[in-house]
Image (cartoon, rainbow, N blue to C red; front, side):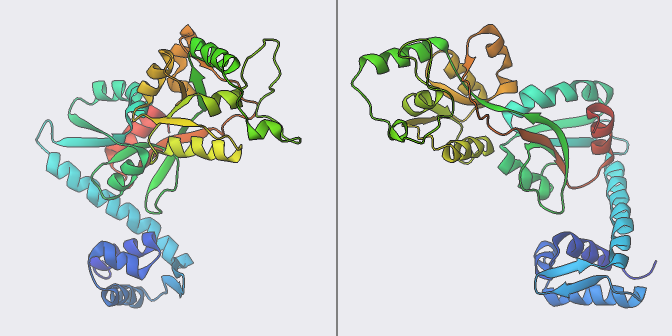
Amino acid sequence: MLGNLNYYNVFITVAKTGSISRAADKLYISQPAVSKSISNLEEQLGTTLFTRSSRGVKLTDEGRLLYEHVENAFTYIENAEDDIVGFGAHSGIELRFGVSTSLCRYVLLDYLKDYINDNPHINITIDCHATLNTIPLVEDGTLDIGLICKTDIPKDMTYIDLTEIHDIFVANQSYLDNLSRERAEGPAVTNPYLMMGNFTGIIDDTSAKPNVLSTRELLETGNLMLLEKENITRRHVERYLSENDILPSRVLEVNNMDLLIDFAAIGLGISGVVKEFAKEKLRTGEVVELPLSVPLPPRKIGFIYKRKRREITSFLTDYVGC
């Protein structure tokens, strides 16, 4: 084989990071050592693998061709190592999932049932983390595969779309009725948005029923229950509220989507939830969906992984259909 395997490892790392300095950090070697390895490889192959600029490095056409082959080769080597480690041991192969509790309960478990039945020799580990915590754990190899809400994905990781989810606001109907009644019986409340002559509400404020609050008024005067601030779902909902100039007066933080749904069902307030996760209580009428003329944008969820292991490929292809 031309060159040295270490040169190819450095080459792969530089290609994925797009930077000599970031590659050096990942490999725990100096930048000059990275540059020297790339120069040696280019000299031995008789071609230029990267173009350099102030923004970093970019693969040439020859570099992209080499990258495709080398990445596959390293994947085969890693798979072989996994097989050797697990050889002869009935429970030697492990597949580690990272997923939030809600995505695990409402999405992942359905896909895992058949996979586990068909692959009893594979140890399945599930670590429940929010999306923003799952991504770095998959990237550093602590976890093998993650199910996440789509967001910024590091360049060296693969993301595969699975489906869409839809965020809504729900509450118990009695809570909404009581909130409207209290508002009607209480002192007049000045809402600056309703005083704006050119203001168009997020839904129509007119109703055949007297003293019925609009969705905007419900969100601004009721107990609005949301996930914690660093959660992607919370950020998505807050962005929507901000873009539509909705100013909640009371926000209660809850760290679990199921609790948000349950709290809304017993009348503690209005919850921002994922519709697909609340469908059972919506079906039974324990909660109702607040109408919005401008719905929250749908979001995608999908799987991420860094190392293309045989077990990951089998799970995604044969059991998920990705």
